[in-house]
Length: 187
Image (tube, rainbow, N blue to C red; front, side):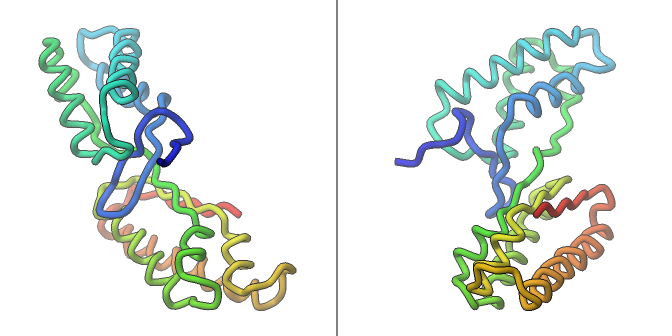
């Protein structure tokens, strides 16, 4: 049995990327959908709580596809007679967070080629899944794991530069397909 860090399921974006379904993101998405309609903003918060309640209490999975989530929200809104709001929903999924340390763990220490293949798969999945923001974290622990060292060295600096370069090249190529894509790399 897997214990989720919160009760809401993860949102699958693309074939292998996951994003956290957060209350704030859900409320913001629905509030933005009410703009320009005769539906008051406070109602978006109520709708958001209803969606959360459904996901926590009635949705059986721990992961929901972003398309399925938005389809369910649209159908619910339409059923409630809120067709304007349903038509106004921005189907941009929440930010995709990618753990570089987890990719390094899966690749195994010293297997840089496998790591870069896994990283490439995550990047492609997120891009083609419609992600607008990618957040990479765990760089320092990733590099130390892959170099099998406890103390930071010049070898670590070199590998970090390679990973940064790989992500930057992806961002530049992805900008041609999606100029609004934001990429953030944290330590």
